Image: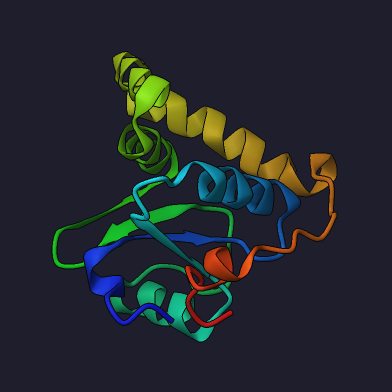
Length: 137
């Protein structure tokens, strides 16, 4: 595990979800600035994150982005921030803020509710460099 995870943006995701794993892979491939690390919500590290914030430790349908000592975001706010941090053309995701978050979170919840039905459950094998970005996997 990277000793400096406190200096990274940590993404917590449902480790059993094919869609979530697809998006983790997508972020890994675009993380040119090496600014993200990942942990499944089911991991000890993920569970500790949830407990410390009084969040549900049994339901894993929300993506969280955490910058230690600064903030944590969830759902569509996390998605937009991740896209902005990746940069390049993805910075245009900031336009998503024109949609009220209660509406974009509602759309997020619909996808989340149906994610297991539409996900491809194929196994992704990260490279050694990418594997080092995972906490408690």
